[in-house]
Length: 407
Image (cartoon, rainbow, N blue to C red; front, side):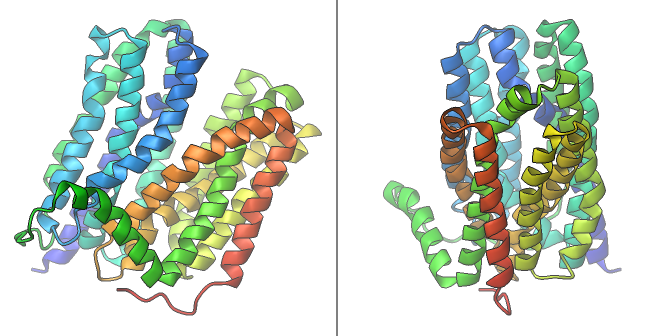
């Protein structure tokens, strides 16, 4: 009996359940800034500090997976410990009522959420064929996203009735999320029996090596470097407009909370869920550069459609639906690019660079976008962010190499 199809089926099942069980806490995570300010009485400085620390800590999470190359036996433990640590603080929510504790738990969550991604993607790469990998990953993400839409609306209604319920909700969501560890612990990884015979590096080597190896990889793999910078320009544009979106919605459009919730939760969620299977098909029919180009152009088009909403609010829903479409492709390309560029080699190095680059642009673009929105206006920031996405999409389409070569 061929075990490979069975391993793929089990991996696909684990991927779906991991997304479904992780989604409750991920959805509640989006309410943290609101809970801090409204229920716990956090100062604007504390809310701003949380916003600043999330991308900064993402850069540091790079070190969690930096030593995985050639250490197959550590992949599962890397994912399991990251999954445990990111949820554990929220189990204390019913007994701890502190602004700083919630900020620490939120920053800790983002650190380990990002930290476990490279090892998790390498496990998926080893246990699933390239043909099935993108499709199953996309479908499982769409299911999780659809679940998140329902949960967001339900949790929002519950918190409106009783804001103090956030403690019980976070405790329950963290407890459900721990079920992910049971699912992932049963995964059998191909090649996990390999023994690690490498020497233990010094502290200086641990600090310097990840950055040195990443720099070397970017120089050796010009195709991956070109892809990375294309994603950096478009991602910077997307993050730049985030602080301008609420200002545009309130000051320019004058939309209500219900209208904005419908656009963000329902329209964007439908766009993500409905488009994900299509992106999964296309990722195997075109190279990753053309795929990324379509993603960047789609996100750029979001800013154009959003500008039409000044004449009719229906365009707000159309724009956010299209934003969900772009997010569906972006989520797939960003996560699958590491395994794609790695070929038959180790993908954690590539995925690790994705994580640290996302953290770097996240640390710079939102504060800059917020400052520009106040000084120049939200419309000008939307135009600038959209222009960066269109520019990146056009460059990626024009500059794609003929062939992507593995290491």
